[in-house]
Image (cartoon, rainbow, N blue to C red; front, top):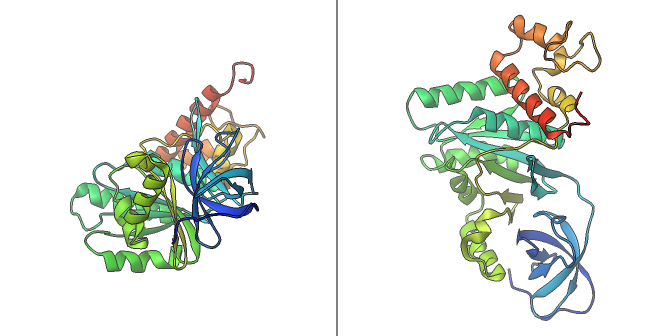
Length: 309
């Protein structure tokens, strides 16, 4: 794709391809790219957004308006929220047994996708490795499949052809957001799905004059049959934006057991709780209940004292 030449004075629509702070790379429908600034505002434009821009000189533009979104995935903690991408169709959570398998991160990402009303895919990478940790990770993938989550086991470096064959039925024709902790092999998967990803990342960095800093933000890559959005690896997935009363409803193993005695049951110490009865009967994994209680504690702590009961 060519970089933008001289532009007309007319506004144009574009896609946000990369960004850092108020500076973004946007691409119009003809493939031209611009460095665009969201003048006067900050934080309301994410990678993947469709925006209306006005030309502002050679290869430059001003984002005048963010167009309506079809979807948005973000994570949040007590201090701030981080928009990962807008207008995606699938959240692909990449995990692996090594360097470390964080089950709670995986569960949190799947919950965030459910709250955003987005389908999800678990990509268990590095399954060519041997060891008890790899076997345990495979077992967790099977448990998630039993709960209704889509999941594939792949080895991006050892078997790239097999990995692509496993991913194609899920990602073709979709805009796929890749999320995962550092070291899970997300970059290897990205390079399989988007062979020119490194070159285009370098172009984004050049246009923004940020060097390697672009790796701290999401990046949008068009493919022959859809798009892939890459995100930087991060170690925690905050869910401060999810209200306490919604958490259990978005856990597929909890949802069938929410007929509690009290309509506002928090599934903690209340009598007649369907969730706790299901845990006692072996219908909900105790680890999942411990996970729920951790999220519930966080949700209560994020509320102001006047909002807590």
